[in-house]
Length: 252
Image (cartoon, rainbow, N blue to C red; front, side, top):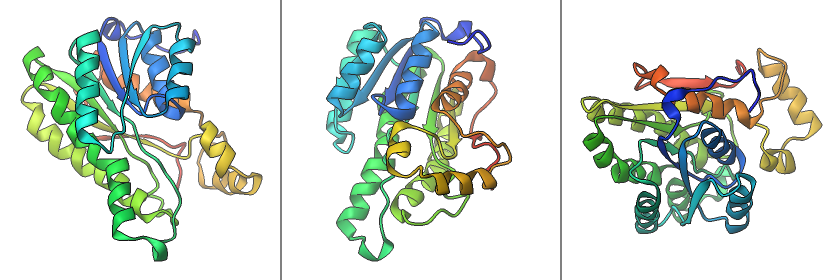
Protein backbone atom coordinates (compact mmCIF):
# COMPACT_ATOMS: atom_id res chain seq x y z
CA UNK A 1 0.00 0.00 0.00
CA UNK A 2 1.50 3.38 -0.97
CA UNK A 3 2.55 5.53 1.98
CA UNK A 4 0.30 8.30 0.68
CA UNK A 5 -2.86 6.20 1.04
CA UNK A 6 -4.90 6.37 4.25
CA UNK A 7 -5.02 3.67 6.90
CA UNK A 8 -8.31 3.08 8.68
CA UNK A 9 -7.84 1.62 12.16
CA UNK A 10 -11.55 0.79 12.29
CA UNK A 11 -11.10 -1.74 9.46
CA UNK A 12 -8.48 -3.81 11.25
CA UNK A 13 -9.99 -7.16 12.21
CA UNK A 14 -13.30 -6.38 10.55
CA UNK A 15 -14.97 -9.18 8.56
CA UNK A 16 -15.62 -8.24 4.94
CA UNK A 17 -17.46 -10.21 2.24
CA UNK A 18 -16.92 -9.26 -1.41
CA UNK A 19 -18.80 -10.66 -4.40
CA UNK A 20 -16.95 -11.02 -7.69
CA UNK A 21 -13.60 -10.65 -5.95
CA UNK A 22 -11.35 -12.71 -8.22
CA UNK A 23 -10.47 -10.09 -10.82
CA UNK A 24 -10.72 -6.46 -11.86
CA UNK A 25 -12.14 -3.96 -9.39
CA UNK A 26 -13.19 -6.78 -7.06
CA UNK A 27 -9.66 -8.11 -6.72
CA UNK A 28 -8.37 -4.62 -5.97
CA UNK A 29 -11.02 -4.28 -3.26
CA UNK A 30 -10.05 -7.61 -1.71
CA UNK A 31 -6.36 -6.63 -1.65
CA UNK A 32 -7.14 -3.20 -0.22
CA UNK A 33 -9.13 -4.60 2.71
CA UNK A 34 -6.48 -7.26 3.36
CA UNK A 35 -3.83 -4.54 3.53
CA UNK A 36 -5.92 -2.82 6.21
CA UNK A 37 -5.84 -5.94 8.37
CA UNK A 38 -9.45 -6.93 7.68
CA UNK A 39 -10.64 -10.54 7.53
CA UNK A 40 -11.68 -10.81 3.89
CA UNK A 41 -13.74 -13.48 2.17
CA UNK A 42 -14.85 -13.31 -1.44
CA UNK A 43 -17.16 -15.25 -3.72
CA UNK A 44 -16.49 -15.87 -7.40
CA UNK A 45 -16.99 -18.46 -10.12
CA UNK A 46 -13.49 -17.98 -11.57
CA UNK A 47 -11.29 -20.68 -10.04
CA UNK A 48 -8.01 -19.63 -11.68
CA UNK A 49 -8.45 -15.96 -10.81
CA UNK A 50 -9.51 -16.70 -7.25
CA UNK A 51 -6.60 -19.03 -6.57
CA UNK A 52 -4.16 -16.50 -8.05
CA UNK A 53 -5.54 -13.80 -5.75
CA UNK A 54 -5.29 -16.04 -2.69
CA UNK A 55 -1.66 -16.72 -3.61
CA UNK A 56 -0.97 -13.02 -4.21
CA UNK A 57 -2.29 -12.18 -0.73
CA UNK A 58 -0.23 -15.02 0.78
CA UNK A 59 -3.31 -16.93 1.88
CA UNK A 60 -4.64 -14.10 4.06
CA UNK A 61 -8.02 -14.05 2.31
CA UNK A 62 -10.70 -16.72 2.05
CA UNK A 63 -12.56 -17.77 -1.08
CA UNK A 64 -15.69 -19.74 -1.89
CA UNK A 65 -16.84 -20.65 -5.38
CA UNK A 66 -20.38 -19.85 -6.48
CA UNK A 67 -22.32 -18.80 -9.55
CA UNK A 68 -24.15 -15.75 -8.19
CA UNK A 69 -27.01 -16.31 -10.61
CA UNK A 70 -27.81 -19.28 -8.35
CA UNK A 71 -29.08 -17.66 -5.15
CA UNK A 72 -28.92 -20.89 -3.16
CA UNK A 73 -25.24 -21.22 -4.12
CA UNK A 74 -24.60 -17.63 -3.05
CA UNK A 75 -26.27 -18.24 0.31
CA UNK A 76 -24.25 -21.42 0.83
CA UNK A 77 -20.98 -19.63 -0.04
CA UNK A 78 -21.74 -16.88 2.45
CA UNK A 79 -22.56 -19.44 5.12
CA UNK A 80 -19.18 -21.09 4.53
CA UNK A 81 -17.37 -17.76 4.72
CA UNK A 82 -19.20 -16.98 7.96
CA UNK A 83 -18.07 -20.30 9.42
CA UNK A 84 -14.46 -19.52 8.45
CA UNK A 85 -14.27 -15.80 9.27
CA UNK A 86 -17.25 -14.88 11.40
CA UNK A 87 -20.34 -12.87 10.46
CA UNK A 88 -19.92 -10.11 7.88
CA UNK A 89 -19.56 -6.58 9.18
CA UNK A 90 -19.03 -5.19 5.67
CA UNK A 91 -20.57 -6.37 2.41
CA UNK A 92 -19.32 -5.20 -0.98
CA UNK A 93 -21.77 -6.11 -3.74
CA UNK A 94 -19.29 -5.87 -6.58
CA UNK A 95 -20.02 -8.73 -9.01
CA UNK A 96 -21.22 -7.71 -12.48
CA UNK A 97 -20.39 -8.19 -16.16
CA UNK A 98 -20.65 -5.42 -18.74
CA UNK A 99 -21.02 -7.48 -21.91
CA UNK A 100 -22.02 -5.38 -24.91
CA UNK A 101 -25.22 -6.31 -26.76
CA UNK A 102 -27.44 -4.98 -29.53
CA UNK A 103 -30.90 -4.05 -28.31
CA UNK A 104 -32.44 -5.60 -31.46
CA UNK A 105 -31.08 -9.02 -30.54
CA UNK A 106 -32.05 -9.16 -26.85
CA UNK A 107 -34.40 -12.00 -25.94
CA UNK A 108 -36.42 -12.30 -22.73
CA UNK A 109 -34.08 -15.08 -21.63
CA UNK A 110 -30.98 -12.94 -22.21
CA UNK A 111 -32.55 -9.98 -20.41
CA UNK A 112 -33.39 -12.09 -17.37
CA UNK A 113 -29.89 -13.60 -17.30
CA UNK A 114 -28.33 -10.13 -17.39
CA UNK A 115 -30.45 -8.96 -14.46
CA UNK A 116 -29.46 -12.10 -12.54
CA UNK A 117 -25.81 -11.39 -13.31
CA UNK A 118 -25.81 -7.67 -12.57
CA UNK A 119 -28.55 -6.94 -10.03
CA UNK A 120 -30.62 -9.72 -8.44
CA UNK A 121 -27.82 -11.26 -6.35
CA UNK A 122 -27.15 -7.89 -4.68
CA UNK A 123 -30.47 -7.94 -2.86
CA UNK A 124 -30.09 -11.55 -1.76
CA UNK A 125 -26.54 -10.90 -0.56
CA UNK A 126 -27.89 -8.09 1.60
CA UNK A 127 -30.66 -10.35 2.86
CA UNK A 128 -28.07 -12.97 3.80
CA UNK A 129 -25.80 -10.71 5.88
CA UNK A 130 -28.16 -8.09 7.31
CA UNK A 131 -29.46 -10.21 10.23
CA UNK A 132 -25.93 -10.61 11.61
CA UNK A 133 -25.29 -6.89 11.16
CA UNK A 134 -28.49 -6.16 13.06
CA UNK A 135 -27.34 -8.42 15.88
CA UNK A 136 -23.97 -6.64 15.91
CA UNK A 137 -25.56 -3.20 16.10
CA UNK A 138 -24.44 -1.95 12.69
CA UNK A 139 -22.56 -2.54 9.48
CA UNK A 140 -21.73 -1.15 6.07
CA UNK A 141 -23.05 -2.32 2.71
CA UNK A 142 -21.53 -0.96 -0.50
CA UNK A 143 -23.24 -1.59 -3.82
CA UNK A 144 -21.25 -1.08 -7.01
CA UNK A 145 -23.05 0.75 -9.80
CA UNK A 146 -21.72 2.45 -12.95
CA UNK A 147 -21.93 5.92 -14.41
CA UNK A 148 -22.95 4.34 -17.72
CA UNK A 149 -26.58 5.31 -17.18
CA UNK A 150 -25.68 8.89 -16.25
CA UNK A 151 -23.64 9.19 -19.42
CA UNK A 152 -26.41 7.56 -21.50
CA UNK A 153 -24.01 4.90 -22.74
CA UNK A 154 -25.42 2.70 -25.50
CA UNK A 155 -24.82 -0.82 -26.78
CA UNK A 156 -25.60 -2.59 -23.50
CA UNK A 157 -29.18 -1.76 -22.40
CA UNK A 158 -29.63 -4.71 -20.03
CA UNK A 159 -26.42 -3.86 -18.15
CA UNK A 160 -27.15 -0.13 -17.96
CA UNK A 161 -30.69 -0.78 -16.74
CA UNK A 162 -29.41 -3.07 -13.99
CA UNK A 163 -26.81 -0.54 -12.90
CA UNK A 164 -29.40 2.22 -12.79
CA UNK A 165 -31.56 0.02 -10.55
CA UNK A 166 -28.71 -0.39 -8.05
CA UNK A 167 -29.39 3.17 -6.86
CA UNK A 168 -32.98 2.31 -6.01
CA UNK A 169 -31.84 -0.78 -4.13
CA UNK A 170 -29.33 1.25 -2.14
CA UNK A 171 -31.80 3.91 -1.09
CA UNK A 172 -34.64 1.60 -0.09
CA UNK A 173 -32.33 -0.70 1.90
CA UNK A 174 -30.67 2.31 3.56
CA UNK A 175 -34.13 3.24 4.85
CA UNK A 176 -35.06 -0.29 5.93
CA UNK A 177 -31.73 -0.95 7.69
CA UNK A 178 -30.78 2.51 8.91
CA UNK A 179 -32.55 2.12 12.23
CA UNK A 180 -30.08 -0.68 12.97
CA UNK A 181 -27.12 1.60 12.13
CA UNK A 182 -26.45 -0.31 8.94
CA UNK A 183 -25.26 2.06 6.24
CA UNK A 184 -25.96 1.35 2.56
CA UNK A 185 -24.18 3.32 -0.15
CA UNK A 186 -23.44 3.15 -3.86
CA UNK A 187 -19.99 3.55 -5.41
CA UNK A 188 -20.22 4.75 -9.00
CA UNK A 189 -17.14 4.04 -11.12
CA UNK A 190 -16.50 5.59 -14.49
CA UNK A 191 -14.50 3.77 -17.12
CA UNK A 192 -11.98 1.87 -15.01
CA UNK A 193 -8.84 0.46 -16.64
CA UNK A 194 -9.15 -3.17 -15.60
CA UNK A 195 -7.42 -5.88 -17.63
CA UNK A 196 -10.78 -6.83 -19.13
CA UNK A 197 -11.42 -3.29 -20.38
CA UNK A 198 -7.92 -3.02 -21.80
CA UNK A 199 -8.22 -6.33 -23.63
CA UNK A 200 -11.70 -5.81 -25.08
CA UNK A 201 -12.55 -2.14 -25.54
CA UNK A 202 -9.77 0.31 -24.62
CA UNK A 203 -8.56 1.16 -28.11
CA UNK A 204 -6.43 4.31 -28.55
CA UNK A 205 -9.35 6.02 -30.28
CA UNK A 206 -11.83 5.09 -27.55
CA UNK A 207 -9.45 6.21 -24.80
CA UNK A 208 -8.82 9.57 -26.43
CA UNK A 209 -12.54 10.20 -26.83
CA UNK A 210 -13.11 9.25 -23.21
CA UNK A 211 -10.36 11.53 -21.93
CA UNK A 212 -12.18 14.41 -23.60
CA UNK A 213 -15.32 13.54 -21.61
CA UNK A 214 -13.47 13.57 -18.26
CA UNK A 215 -12.63 16.72 -16.31
CA UNK A 216 -9.38 15.06 -15.22
CA UNK A 217 -6.97 13.91 -17.95
CA UNK A 218 -5.83 10.68 -16.28
CA UNK A 219 -7.31 7.26 -16.89
CA UNK A 220 -8.78 5.67 -13.76
CA UNK A 221 -7.06 2.65 -12.23
CA UNK A 222 -9.06 0.15 -10.10
CA UNK A 223 -7.17 1.09 -6.94
CA UNK A 224 -9.05 4.38 -6.73
CA UNK A 225 -12.42 2.63 -6.65
CA UNK A 226 -11.11 0.42 -3.87
CA UNK A 227 -10.04 3.48 -1.87
CA UNK A 228 -13.58 4.87 -1.97
CA UNK A 229 -14.95 1.49 -0.84
CA UNK A 230 -12.53 1.44 2.10
CA UNK A 231 -13.67 4.88 3.22
CA UNK A 232 -17.35 3.90 3.11
CA UNK A 233 -16.65 0.72 5.08
CA UNK A 234 -14.72 2.58 7.76
CA UNK A 235 -15.95 4.43 10.82
CA UNK A 236 -14.85 7.65 9.11
CA UNK A 237 -18.02 7.33 7.00
CA UNK A 238 -20.31 6.70 9.98
CA UNK A 239 -22.82 9.35 8.85
CA UNK A 240 -22.80 8.44 5.15
CA UNK A 241 -25.74 6.42 3.87
CA UNK A 242 -28.28 6.26 1.01
CA UNK A 243 -25.91 8.12 -1.29
CA UNK A 244 -23.81 7.86 -4.43
CA UNK A 245 -20.04 8.26 -4.32
CA UNK A 246 -18.52 8.90 -7.74
CA UNK A 247 -15.12 7.72 -8.94
CA UNK A 248 -15.29 8.84 -12.58
CA UNK A 249 -12.84 11.74 -12.97
CA UNK A 250 -15.67 14.12 -13.69
CA UNK A 251 -17.07 12.30 -16.71
CA UNK A 252 -19.81 14.11 -18.60
